[in-house]
Length: 113
Length: 110
Image (cartoon, rainbow over all chains, first blue to last red):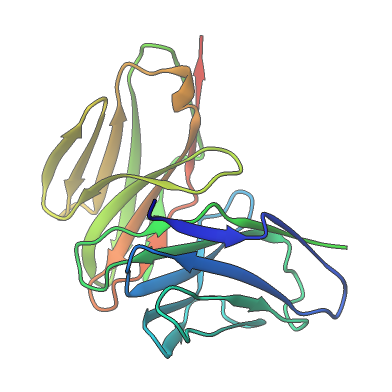
């Protein structure tokens, strides 16, 4: 079945630690996105990539980093510089051209110990 | 940028109709999306409007007025499983990024 997978479902981070969230898609989509969701707030865009080996900062990129070495993979690293990382992280993908919908993975919930 | 407003909460009875409004102010518009999100789960796509008018899809319909910066999602024949958060999102004309509203939590009561 085609779709988007994220792992792990839950992730715990210690102070000063970097953690990486995985996102994989087999939909042959060109574009991939990372969002953060906090209670009572809309989804906020962290980073996005419209093509392999290229990505752009979203609205809240500070404290995060990404890579796009393969079309199907777009991992997100939450660095120690991100002082309030506790949130629900959602990965999405879409075809590059206009008119296509973003489809979401199941999400990773990150908690700070 | 985009500024998107939608009500925080709505409650309705099973079998009834509920209308969720969304207003937006945008520097460039290229479509409006509605997503459904159950608690702790990923958003799932419901509808897409880029031209003015009503799009109907089963029990769900979505309306758009670009001149008014206004959309609504209409949920008919409400079922208990429709209890969820409904997200309005506007796509930017230039870079195709989505900007999301905070979501409307709909509670369906028996």
